[in-house]
Length: 128
Image (cartoon, rainbow, N blue to C red; front, side):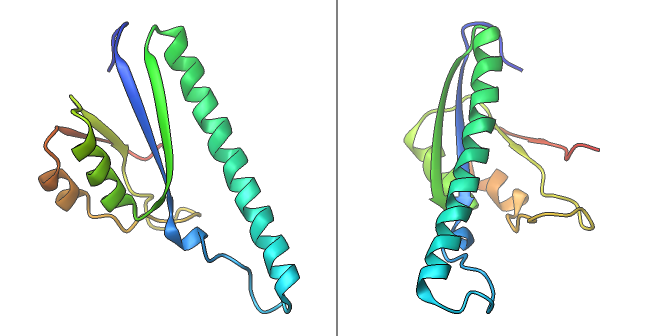
């Protein structure tokens, strides 16, 4: 997809729902909820850092310049905003997680995103 000398800007959007993640009723006092929230944020930050490091290493091995941006927000709005700030040749994103697959499922409308972007959009199928 990219040749040597290309540039990749990796946008990682953490959905806003994570900001309010404090656990269920078993977290019955403020300090326990805060500790749990900090734990979740730390785990999420570690996971994102590991992912970005892997992508950065692959890019470097292939002579590709890599930058990343991690933001909290609504994924569709963040993608559109990032695309307005820079002139991209191609935007690549993963397809929504299929129904029945464990994990958070994106509610983004890929059709609406594709129509709103100025650059071409490549949607990579969810891995089998």
